[in-house]
Image (cartoon, rainbow, N blue to C red; front, side, top):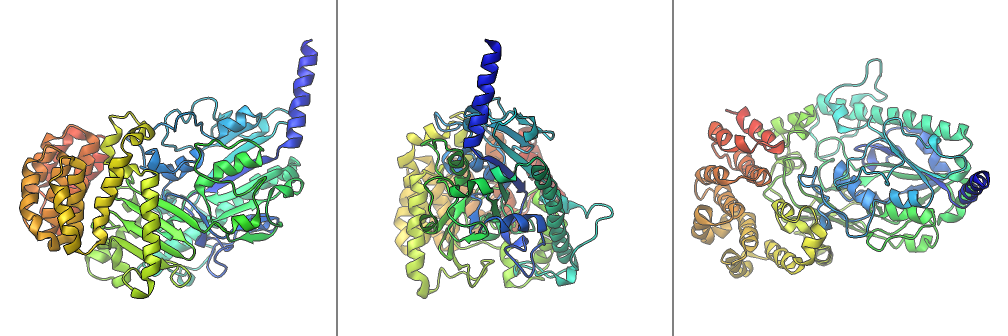
Length: 611
C-alpha cells in the first residue's frame, strides 16, 4: 500500500509538472531602466546574458516599481497590494503591518498548489509573519530550486546586490576595472559635473555588467539542468536608483525599472506577443503576484490590486491599453515626506503634499554616499545651477512633466497654460486614487500603533476622514484667497488631524498665509496634540514669524513615543537646514535622548554634528 501511495504521489507531481511552467525571478537592486543598454543603447551598461534572454523573450518598455525603495517595493510585490492601503509603504516598518483579511503572501498559493518555492535570499518585507513557514520551502543564501522533488514545478527568486546603493560607499572590488571611462559617461542634468560624480557613474555601469555575469551563472545552471524550455525567467530591478535623486524619490528615475521576461519554447502560448518583442503597455510591481499566479494557472485572490500581464486571458491589444502607473514615497528610514507619482501616457505628475520638505533633506543612509555629500556641499556653497540646486529647495505642490521631451523631469509644465487640461486630468485622477485606496498617509504614522498594524481595518472606519483630510491638503492647489476660509475652518476644527493638515497647507503658502500667524502661535503653545503643535511651530519657523525652537523643545520633552519623536525631529532638521533655525543641539539631545529608538538616534546625531 505504501509503495502504491508513493507511486501515485510521484505520478501526480509528474503530471502537475507537465501542466505548469517553472518560474524564476532574477532581481538586481537599485536599478532604473536607463542603466541598461537594452533601454539606453548609447550610455547603458552592456549586459550580454540579459540581452540574450531578451532575444527569446519580452522587453517591457514601461515597467514600474510602485515605490522607490526596497522594503516598500518588495512589500508591494509579495502582497500584490498597494502599500498606502496597508501601511506597508514606510521604509522600514516601526510597526509590522497586517495583510488584508484572508490574503496570503503569494508564494504560499504556489506552494499549496504543489510548487517548490525557494528564495535566495533577500526578503525585506514590511508585513508581519512574512518569514513564516508556508510562504517559502526554503529562504536562505543557499536556497535553490534543485532541492525540489523529481518533476516538481518550482518558483525560485535569486537576488543580486552587486548594484545595491551600499556598494557605492566603496570602490570596485580589487582587480575589477571600469568598463567605461568616467569622462564618457552621460550625466543626468540634475547632477553636478564633477570627477567624483563621473567616477560613481562609471562604477555603477561596471557593477551592472558584473551583475550580468553573476546572473549568467544561474542561466547556465538552468541550461545544464535542461530546464530552459519550461522555465519563465523574469529579470528586473527591485526599484529605480541608485545615484542621488533616484532611489528614495518618487520620480521617474526612482521608479521606472528594467523588466525582461524570457519565454520558454513550451509555454509561448501563455504570452501575448512573439519572442523578441518589446511591449509598450505599462506594468507595475503590484501586477507581479497576479502574473505569476496566472502563469501557474491559479486563481487570483480578490484582495490583490494588480492585474496579470502574462498568462491565460492576457492579449496584446488589452495590455497596450494600460497607460497608467502610480508610485508613492513617504518615510525612508528617519526622513519623512509624502509624494504621490502618476504616469499617464507620456506625462508624469508629482503631487507633493508637503512641498516644503525639500528632496535633499538629510537622511542618514543616503548621505553615506560620497556623491550625495558632494552634491549637498556644492548646493550649500551656491555652486550649482538652477536645475542642479532644485533638489535642495522647496518644491511646488504639483509638478507635470513630458517624459518624451524631458526624461529626467526637470521642466515643470504645471504652470504652463498650454498644459492646463492635461494638468486638470492628472489632478483629478490623483484625487480619485488617494481617496479610493484610501491612502493611510493622510494620518501620521503614529496612527498605526493603536491599530496594531491592522491598517486595512483602521481605514474601513476612517475612509470619510481620509477623504476630508485629502480635501484640506488639496487647498494647496487653489489660489490663497479662495482657500483662506477653508484653511480657517480646518485650523478651528475639533478634529486634530484637520488642524494638522490646515497647518501643512499654511506652510505651503508660506508668508502669504500670514493672517494665520496668531492662530498658529496659539496652536504651537497650547494644542492638546503634539503633532499639531509641531506643524504650527514649523509654519512659524519656515516663515520667520517667530522662533520655533522653544516650542520644539517643549514638545520633545512631552512626547513619550519614539515614532512621534522622529516626526517632530524631521521638522527640527527641516527648520535647521531650510530656514536656518539656530539649534541648541545639547538641549535637543537632552530632550530626545531618552526616546532614542533607532531612527531618532540618526536625527540627534545629525543635529549634534554642527555643535
